[in-house]
Amino acid sequence: MSKLSDIVQFSNNDIKLLLLALIISSIISSILVYLLTSTYNQEIRFMFSNWVIDISAGLAFIFSLTLIIRERKRKSEGKIYVSLFIAILLWFSAEIVYTYYQSISRIEVPYPSYADSLWLLGYVFMAYHLYSSFYYWNKKNKFSESSVFIITIFSVLLILFLVQSSAITYSNDINLILIAILYHIADTIILIPALVLLWNLRHEKLLYIHRALISLSVIVNTFADVGYIFTFNSGINIIIEHAWIWDLLYNLSYILLAGALFWYDRLIQILNKKIDQSILVNKKRFQFLWEKQDKAEIIGNDCYSYIDKENIKDTLNSLITNAKNEISSLIFIQKKYDHNLIPNLNLLLTDSKIINNLKIRILFDNIFNLKLLLSRKPATLDIQYVKIDKKLGSDMIIFIIDHQHLLFIDLKKYMSPNDLLATYTANNNIVLQLSSLLENLSNLSELREQSTKIL
View (cartoon, one colour):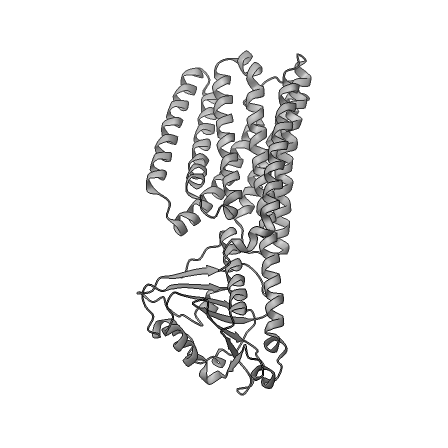
């Protein structure tokens, strides 16, 4: 089975280039921030160091906007990154406002200001994004309860310490106390899912690189917030002297965020390319299904045998009953059909005598089509449901049994009862090619964190 090895060859160079770009951009921008903030001219210090951070935040915004536009063109159902885009937009806007205060209004430390309103509002959308991802991966992988407990306790203790410190420092200024507490609470809220995701999503690293980078970005940003507020509590002169340290961290957090979004978009492109290539190759192999060639051509091909409508369920029942390890199925039906063309196909998995430890995976495009094969979930079977997020070129149903048997059901509304309806093959190359297609469709859905809840 291909799993992720199928796309590694397409992405190894991309990973190296991404890591190299992150390292180089982090080093260069960090040097710039340090040099510019070490100047004795305070106006130049604030202006240029802010510009470096604005550029990094702007890159994150551009990559997030590009991702949203491309996903819309791909007609993806994934909406989870819309909230992240809004969060980045608000934070980027806050950076611009902060730069305005320091560079134009000549305010040395514009805290608190209207920029803080934008930053705090951005936390709401960032929290929604992170907790949506947390919910998806916890449901799929069941996070370690100890990791969630330890991280939560650590975060709560941290916020209590910071809130107490701010309350003592700003005892005479209720507004500063309130803003500091809001920042501490907001940082803690997004820190918990970021740490849990980084702790638990370690396997199959190729799919989770963007998640790790987003989590690291949040962690670095939180550390910068804590340092900034803690230094501000020590006095105005202290914050001016050490502001460059926190500027370095804020800048790094935006670079990590930009890198995460760039890599995520690139990996989606790689998976889509692999899926399109698989469909193209298999369209040629199953040309008779798409172009409706005559049966004589199929009979003369040693790789295939055709199955008429009346024998489809019997054939499937025999294959499924004799399955030893796993069953994979793809159901993709976009057009409206007379589903009586496939009589009694639903409840097939329920009716068959399947061994309980069999691995079953069903990829489907919508719930209605899923019920074509399974109108209710069998209580004794462990079935993994994957809602695919990719438009395919033809409507089809595919069964792959133990990576040895392939049944390909072609759907055409205009078929007469005597027309060819399905083909069977045990050719190893063909079965592996279709298995690769199903695996990449599953990876794409997992990457986009598509919900698989069955109602």
